[in-house]
Length: 167
Image 1 (cartoon, rainbow, N blue to C red):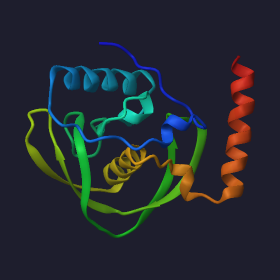
Image 2: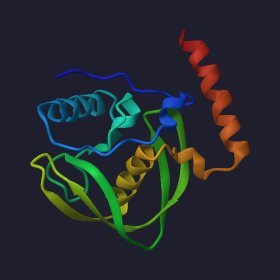
Image 3: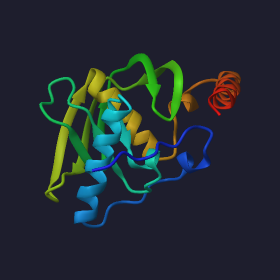
Image 4: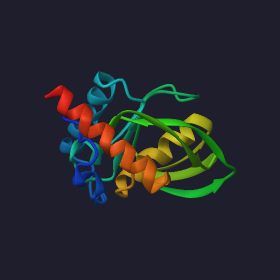
């Protein structure tokens, strides 16, 4: 497998809306394996396909909370939500920045697994937050979109400075 290149804000490809996966193929297996390798290499707890410039509705989540293995969710949709929670979130596409984001504490999602079966998963706490964060990516939304315009402008300036330092 291989590690994929992660897109960084303000790359406009992060704003694209992912297309549904029509069929589970060998290519989809390869994409999900590469996404998992990338997530671990970058020390993330979740990754959306759009973050690696693959415009398909696929997310992978590190085995956290009560989950014993990595979650691979294809065409995920939130079908139930309640409660509220806010923790400091970070993102592999927005390095070195974290912010408190309002989320639902509990969600139920419907998705397709790698066997092509429709599954329903209930999640709360950190797992719920992570899934919501990654689904946002599939819809072209970043966690900083929940922040004020002033805060987003500051983040952009910091990221531009960081990029110049790295070059």
